Image 1: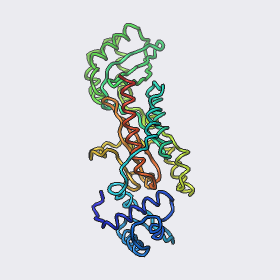
Image 2: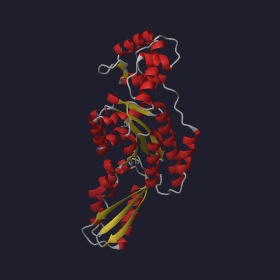
Image 3: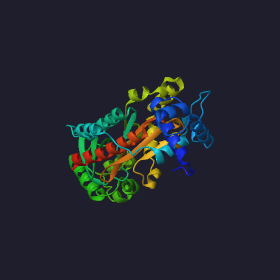
Image 4: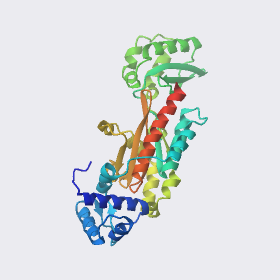
Length: 351
């Protein structure tokens, strides 16, 4: 929360300037506030208060316009202290619930559907990252022969999620050897977190280097970081709502349009910021990063609202990205409700 103390009048005026700017995307003048909101202040008094708010960095005065717009500092104070409590309409809640309990059985399909719902609900860019596997506990490994020198490795974690990877072996694989390796891997690795498996794999399997097993053990040793790792960033997130966000007035400007297109094409930046662990230490229900609060310059004109969803010991992130001029209260409510609903549905489908 901003440590600068505003007077009650300043808080009222800042609140209405932010709300009006969110509605219209146009700089807000004192006469507009006076006519639209019954606050018992003259346009001249409102103008003076807006001038004070500009001097203290909460509002800005763009170009030669008579009106003001919120700064990042103004948005932050509004979000922390002035906006209405986050709440969704009953029909919006019903739509989310009815859609998520539809006949979607696959986790991937459910995440894609959830991303689409969130983008339609907020008219912004929705992003959902797949669960990270570092804290996942291995339940079992299955090895399936695909050919004489190729095997499919099926990794099941205790939350029910499944990861698959294909490995090539330099020597022909015998079915008995494959089953033997599968048994050994499960005996030595089941119940461990992926991060621990990566660190200790060679130590745990060093005694199993007999001639008939060595080629398979060797390929596992060479590929352990790949097998027991997170999905690569480019494949780890679903983005939805590009058409929705491009309809926002901000993107009639060519430079702004170019910026959002570059951001959409560079999914790594979005995934990195959504998955940052240190921001979760403050215990917030939801995380809101506004403009220059985002560490990446590409997001300096955008706001990012995120919340984790959980499936057992693994978690992913639900988020919305859009212009700083967004309906924060509604979008916070949408992100929170969608993340909690996704957690519930994933739990049901993986019991």
